[in-house]
Length: 432
Image (cartoon, rainbow, N blue to C red):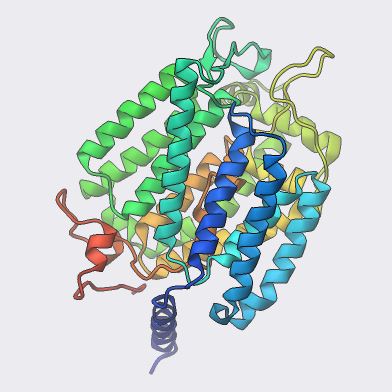
């Protein structure tokens, strides 16, 4: 047997062992999913205009930590030795980086969610995000429109940071910032895309296009709208067969595997290379609503940290003259605020996630991570686990695969992932 054939056989055997393990449902999954749901609700306090009772916040924090800790300890038999070894290291780095950045809890919980997902069906995790996040989003928007909570508006008068007229008002629709609402909608659409495990049907594409245009008309969030349109265009092109062969090629898979580190590199390179005396760079900066100039100021004033550092950001101008300096780029926040160690762990995790998805020919998950990583160029929510669920795919179970990985002949009337998974004759593919 050739060395190449031996490697292919070992990969197939590894996938078979993985499938055998994940079919045994983790009995403490309810603790994990409950902790996840509560974490999403808890963190939306910072994203929306809802005012939680002050005494409730520490109680929610304690309950989240308690549920996830109990789940992890009761699930140790599902862990492989390397996961047990890696967990305390990742937890320590997350805790130190979060503490130094002045934002301890979210990063510790994120680490626990990633490692706690062992033995839990990833589609159940996505379902929690859809149900909880979707309910919060719809409730918040409706409440803001009927006057239950404030529908804050901003006039985009931040000089260098806007192409729009100063009189143009953006509605926040119950969120703290207009782009937060638009980004949340994008991640809900992307989560739904991964959850159904197939290309969008035409009626779904039309529905999401109408929704996106409505959000754009209210929030004027052009870049977030662009991300949704890109996802819809991909789904349409794949459905029509234009890019099916390309998506199933090894080169494409390798490019997707390296997409997140590439986005991180291009973020740093463009920011560090920005030259305010160059017309070309200024035009790019204006198109990116000031992200390059603001990022360069942060790099020059604080530098890159190893294990996190505090960096005070303002999302609006203050009376004392402090201008808007919020880093609307996930990768810059990572290297400047949370440190290179945490950044390296995060990027390595996404490389593994996409690599594993490539072995399963899981086109949907690969594209979902790519799109989530792409939006990290323009928003901070890529690194926030209460918005972005895809980091949790690292150790979660993927026994059902996706409709795209089970067959290349998915038509408009095709079944969803859950329905296909019930078919005993469904095939599972590995990399050829």
